[in-house]
Length: 158
Image 1 (cartoon, one colour):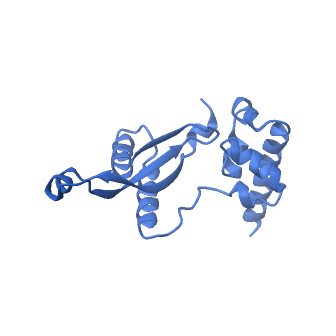
Image 2 (cartoon, rainbow, N blue to C red):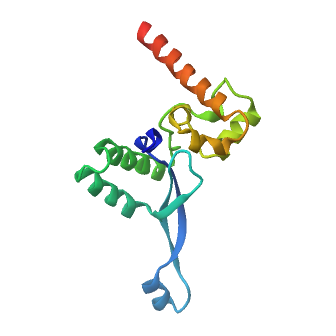
Image 3 (cartoon, rainbow, N blue to C red):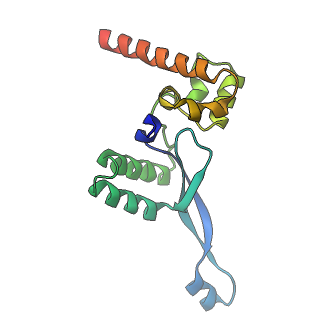
């Protein structure tokens, strides 16, 4: 199993209109209500899973209770969902690739398109997972590893 699978997935929340069947029947025409959905993407993947947000979080809490995922994930995703509902931006778990000063904008774009949103996930990606980045993938991974090691050194010196 890849180390990236040990990192939490990326999530995005959005509202989608869903028919409110009871209100539609009462009004005699289509009526909808906004329902919060979550888009879940595993680091290093372009595949996404979309589900009603609160349902997904409830399932994640049950999986955490059973020891299938870290308990901290369930708590963190509930907090992210609560923050999003308040209109706050959902933070990434790590250093965003988009603002990582080591990369050119075009390199950052290629890495993000390959499904890596944080430096930590890029550093932990398997060779197979990072191959979708294309030319320079191994070099980017090595830069991520070294950058994180240096960041840890600086942090431990403080």
